[in-house]
Length: 88
Image 1: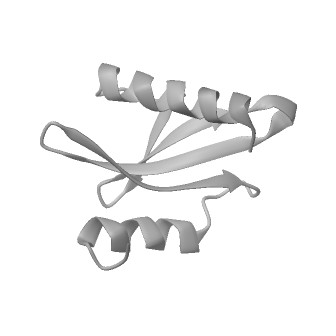
Image 2: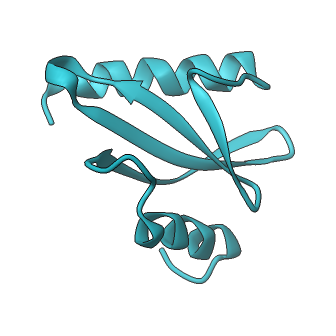
């Protein structure tokens, strides 16, 4: 991941943070209180940052490069565990 990728993802996270609540195409609910920031990167790559919303805070739980149509269960499970405080 290069500086441009990080800048795009950071801008998307900032947009969500300051415009919450916001929905598609930038944000999608994954259920169980987990949301995803959907970032489109150069060369057709896709990044996702999973987060939850606590009172007055956006908590980033996990980020990954998406390689399949569906969010992989292992990535969603990790975010859920982190939200519960079970894994750092």
